[in-house]
Image (cartoon, rainbow over all chains, first blue to last red; front, side, top):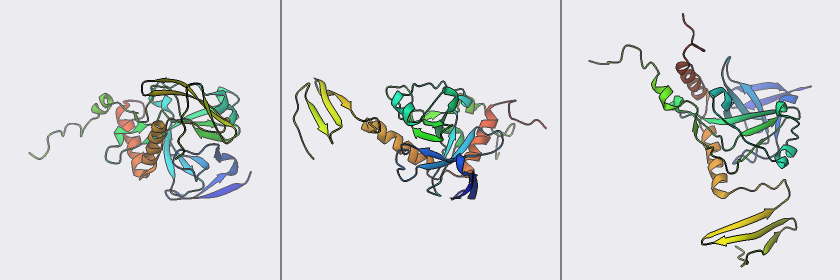
Length: 162
Length: 86
């Protein structure tokens, strides 16, 4: 399999094997011009990955697996969508969700459980699936406030300036 | 905009292969049935808009600082799992 070179705004030129390219059978909503993406690692042990467009250097999303964060996330795919993605089995299916990270406060990151990205590994097809009649939201916190508050805010140096 | 008046049970045909039927009306609520080829995506407008906006927001300005910040926040709240005790 030949390598392709992808121009990216964040990582410069990236070389990946052609068989790693995901083809979106439906566009990610709002980004109709980009149908080809690759998944790039973030860092060792990181639960995050980059979903980088092959067609648009600027376009990249941070994605994750909600399961890593202990989120109870389940949905049923319609036969139509399973057919479009040529999904064969649960093992063949990868579910990722887009993460929205506020610049000023990354701990308050949220993820979009209403529009998960479903990938059919074998045939490298993907789609942002819009779930119907579910309780899931586009802004589900990955780290709840209770856990954030446990952060050691500067350890023992709580008093400052006096 | 084309405006059509329909009664319950009546249909509209779009481009030969999409059928919209009025199933029920109750007060200001209309229940529609839509029959379309499987490659046609159908969304409730507000949900479509919400996801489109969420996508837009997620990619705007997202850079290495943001993802690294998120990763660090994660290490802080998971005592023992990824923290390195020196």
